[in-house]
Image 1 (spheres, helix red, strand yellow):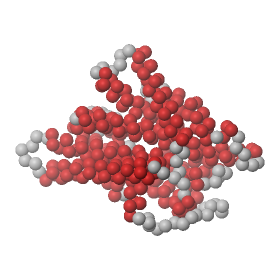
Image 2 (cartoon, rainbow, N blue to C red; image 1 turned 45 degrees about the vertical axis):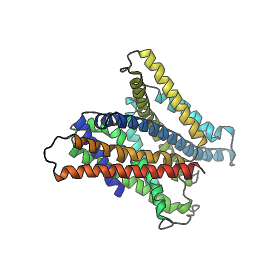
Image 3 (cartoon, rainbow, N blue to C red; image 1 turned 180 degrees about the vertical axis):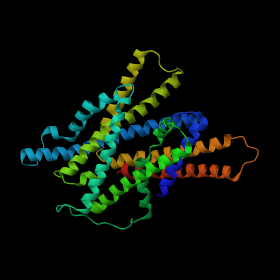
Image 4 (tube, rainbow, N blue to C red; image 1 turned 30 degrees about the horizontal axis):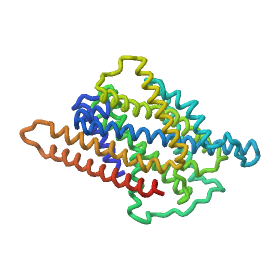
Length: 374
């Protein structure tokens, strides 16, 4: 909840800077307000973050398919046999090639907007199932130890990447703000506060009840802790797969747009007018992106390791870049006398940059030297 104050503040700052700079996307706001160096760093960070998130999505698909297929095979064969077509690498690959790749190729992704409602319903269903399973647990589920506090205060920082990963919607917040009927900072503050509070209840209900149900033996993906034969949980897994199938192309589109912008800027060209060249380059970018994320997902089965790496990067979008934008925006204002509110905003921006840099450095170092080195 303490982090949520700064998360909402970052969203409001981005809307304020978007109005001041008259730009409509996250990277364009950073470019216009903070300059070329910060703009390039922001674009690279967005590309890396969306790439890592796409990899995490494929891992999630594999997790849910493992449980669903295990239940189906056991029911049909009468034993826990494992035919070749139930192998995790095969199921992820066939799902990705048949469903995700075709959805990622189109130049525009407006046709996927109708899936957002289904994603919301699926998220609430998953949360409701986990809460109900905690209130009325199954007999075969025996929880492990449930510690009331971490063994070391340093372990608190291990939660930072997951929090940042879960609440990071800042990259898409600027175009959403500009799509409002009346894009005003005050009304935007009310909208994002309501949205973040809803997300807080969803995450808290899922996290707390999932942990209390299984204790220290809970999996990184909480749905993996439930038995394969549990029908309501199987429906929840299906909802998660549908949500991820529609989310991967959207994140890929954001990353591909950044790569396209970097390429055109490097070549000193305007928006591509040659349709054939644009289509060829888009296909190459899409297939390369898809194959690399699939390859990583096949050999990194633990979603926690991916989140630990890109979660720290999410802190940059939540704290560092909004803080820099606020500082530059206030410094660009021509004022004869600078009131206390001006100094308060500048100090707040500095604090956000320092906090974001600390979270990014600490979580990334921990991910590299602890999780990845193991």
